[in-house]
Image 1 (cartoon, rainbow, N blue to C red):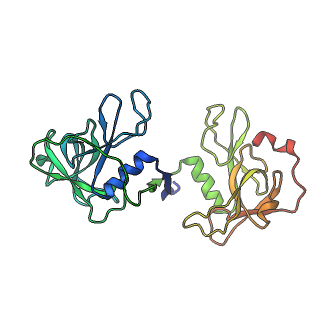
Image 2 (image 1 turned 30 degrees about the vertical axis):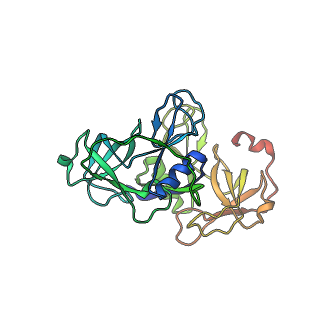
Image 3 (image 1 turned 120 degrees about the vertical axis):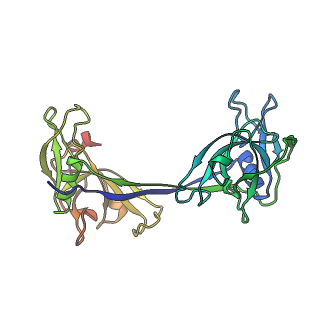
Length: 314
């Protein structure tokens, strides 16, 4: 029985967004140890604030300051914190309705154990020592015995040096284990070959194979070796350098229909100036020593493919 392939994979990218006046005031306020909500037309104070009323869809701009103390409305215990979570020790996820607010804020509660947490308990914000204008400026909530007395008060939302944008990292760690079709495809790549699978019904050859025809919905088993040469069907010019990718910009990333395949795969085009890449360009794979997949594709020197030969693969 062949070895089962598996590999750790990480999908990671920074999500960058600009802030409007409401979100800018909220995050800048956190930096200044001030919690702001937004008031709706019916007088409710929403924390965290939103830019449009979730009921009426009216634009919201009237800011209100609420207290740093509040009441837990619901909670869940986390016995094993993961990387990059707010606390390294076990904690409770909590929804806290701050005094003066009408909605609850999701954050974490530093508590000695689940027996110390209950719905209706009183808590207060523990501020981070260093604050930058992010939700993490609230380090966590902590236990606090007090009565709910504070009410919201109007706030202009004006601060010196307001926060106008944020970068939020998004990351997914997982272990990928391919099935039969993908394993055959990957094993063939390690031998510098490309194999797909033919649908027994429509006879199309899919590369990379998925073990079933996406059109007919039937299993595929017949292996077909394709390529190694192919045709650029469409492409894009990349002008922004990706983190941890040692490729100078600009470069071209293309859909390539390998000879004998009925589905185009992705690949980088090299060996030609980026502004000379074109639809119909004939290319071949370039392998580096020890690699399990082509490093890039380069022109073969053949005449360009006729448009009718690949138009169905766009």
